[in-house]
Image (cartoon, rainbow, N blue to C red; front, side, top):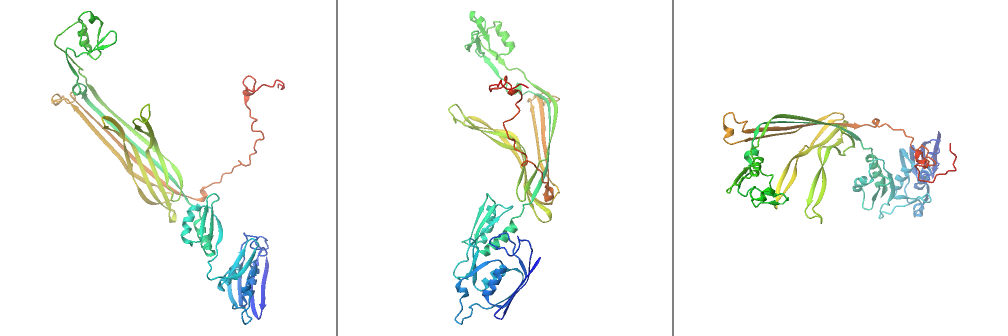
Length: 511
């Protein structure tokens, strides 16, 4: 360490700068000019005191202490009509300040300013023009965490019309052209805003249970009594000749030689086919029907499904995280006459299943404000509608969705329930009169019922990520030497003359 004491006496006035200490390190030594060493840290003086000192001498002393090369505008050093300086004597006493800060304050207090020339490294002390606008200066801020474009929208309202802020996304820098006061205010704002964004670990546990019991009992006579087809008439049975051509002329089997080449159509019941092939001929009519059909059911079934998903994601503070447990379902869009060969079909996909969107916001004491939006969707049924005589079908989707905001401590679990779905279906059939007879309701009737019940539980645990949670990974990737001959690879048997495509050099020695 070394001690520097500067004391000067001019025209009976006393100038004193109290003990100024500087380290021996040449990187921070005050002997280096500020212009040549932008990274130099300004030296803080314990005491700066002037008692009735001429302004020019004060400026020279402070400039020498701040390692500034200065020259004076002739208007500053020109004497007044009485031969004395037009500027009053200076008396100040300041503690723990830099010499450059005292110089700037002294110049401003006496309506002077310092014009810096970075090309020559010489500053000029001149008179400040009251009508002139404050000069603009350029400052480049290297951002660490904040996006430059986002920061421009923050600092723009604090700047005057002449000032500008230009973001550079490539280097993550903010270029500011503003007055010295604005740059100082912007610098303080950047220091407070350009901070690391905290992150939150979102852990979700999604449990969905589904149960589908069904029960069917009785005899369903719909095939007999609901759509019974009855045919009557002498010409009611279509015939086919042995040559394969169909005929509905009503030629009766067994009439003439043509009957030997006539085949009864398959639509006729087997008993009546045999009766007709026997050669029976009736001039009035034949009667045919589908016959009796019934479905006997006495069956119970039950199915139970459980779906468990545990997705995890890390997101920045106040940024949404979306967790999906879905399947992509195609949606067909048909355009009639879309192409020359037929209709045009456009296929799009939609996600059906469980979609969980979580937006965390960290508040004081590691409390986390969560905005949680769970959504459960599935295909419920198919809807069929008729337009212009054509039938169209489309899926009906069931969607269950909740939007909620809560405040919970970091590491605690939020439980979301109530996403229930319970569908019950009952159906019954009965043959009139016969099904009303005592003890005949299960012989001439049928009853079925089914139930589909689903329950969804969602557990969400947000945890604030600390810096200690990140472990640096050591890698020697950049230290790995690059192979000198990348084409020299072992191709095994492909280098042999039998499997290779290049001409074999028979002059090489065989080992």
